[in-house]
Length: 135
Length: 135
DNA sequence: ACAATTGTAACTATAATGTTTACAAATAGA
DNA sequence: TCTATTTGTAAACATTATAGTTACAATTGT
Image (spheres, rainbow over the protein chains, first blue to last red):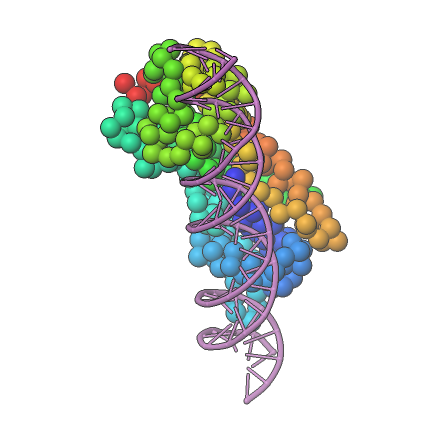
């Protein structure tokens, strides 16, 4: 299972989007999530580097860096989740066994197939859909 | 990311399927994976409970409980992976904030949507496909 | 210059995983 | 019936990732 980073990041983006240009601080966002400002800033930093939000010292987040309709959940996921693979694969198999020798490649292929579908699905959902759901 | 339990289970099922009726012990399977027999037995136990393999004390695994073409990777996943949700959701949000109050439901919906596709994809792949790839 | 806020590093607690040891229960085969 | 073998399961440990916290240098609007 993936961590809460992804869902917390969507929360952060939603607060920023709905503040409509008025700057919001990591403190304010943290109080909406009920968590720590430093954790919020870590994620904000990643979102900024990914070109999703604007933020400045002394002011806070001043808005999305592009329209909510163009921010896919895939781009959010890629920005903040360290482990992007769906499945871990046991690497150190016994290559003298016919199954052990080939299973790695087969599992990689399965992972790729499922993961591609997964990312395609994330690509279809945009921050604008989230905002719509929050109304 | 999901643990290696899923991929290790596929490895276990492959070894059992390819032994073609001849019993295999957890010790033998563990040597193919390069891991511990106890770990293999834990997963075998789960696979047996899920009705995917046959195993007996004093003999070992005696085969698949049904044809490889009818064992989907979804059934394997469901049998052994404890956390079946794709995303963790931060629960304790501030409900006095308009975003905090509603974001949980919205994220649940997103999770459901992506997870459904993910499981549909796993359902399409069967153990027989894995065995084909091992040839 | 000052005060506020980001951006980042370091530390702690907690939980899950992977690994290992151990042993009771079951049972095939002598 | 006895014995040796293997499952099935519990318990302990090391490692890793996450979540949460404290701290502080760097930045910058006023």
